[in-house]
Amino acid sequence: RCLCMYAMARTNKTKKTKCMAQAKRMHKELTDSLKNKNPNILHYVSLLNAEKAALKQKRNQEDVKKMYNDAITMSARGGYVHDAALAQERFADYLLNIAGDLQEARYHIEGAIQRYTNWGAMGVVEHLHNKYQDVLAGSSRH
Image 1 (tube, rainbow, N blue to C red):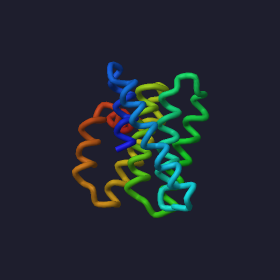
Image 2 (image 1 turned 135 degrees about the vertical axis):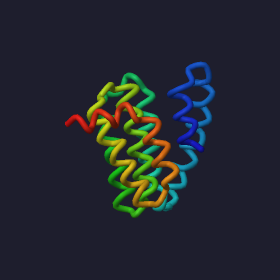
Image 3 (image 1 turned 60 degrees about the horizontal axis):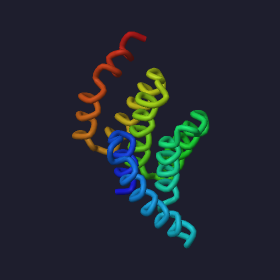
Image 4 (image 1 turned 60 degrees about the vertical axis):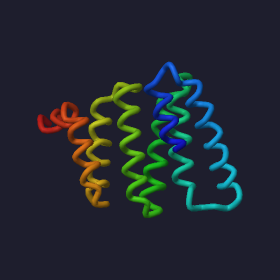
């Protein structure tokens, strides 16, 4: 739910403040849980940290990119294939809509699709193909 609130804050400018407040509260609860030795959420808190940083326009884009890549790596190494896919999907959204890096966004969309496919989430795969068909079409030209 926290991730959804950050995503809504990124896309819904009129409700950004309200969404950010709710996301920050939930993010703090998860971070506190991590401090209480719950290792099963480290990868997820890492993704939330990247999402929060992406919303702060003063943040260096390279720092944000590193945070997303760390979240993807932690999720994959921990065996959380679906969370690694989600992190790549969110990273692609950031790259397309904030950083303006179409080529890297395409790479992460394709990575998310591959991970979702491996996980068996074919409905999500179809959704991503439809949502990003223009971006993915560019990959066949290279």
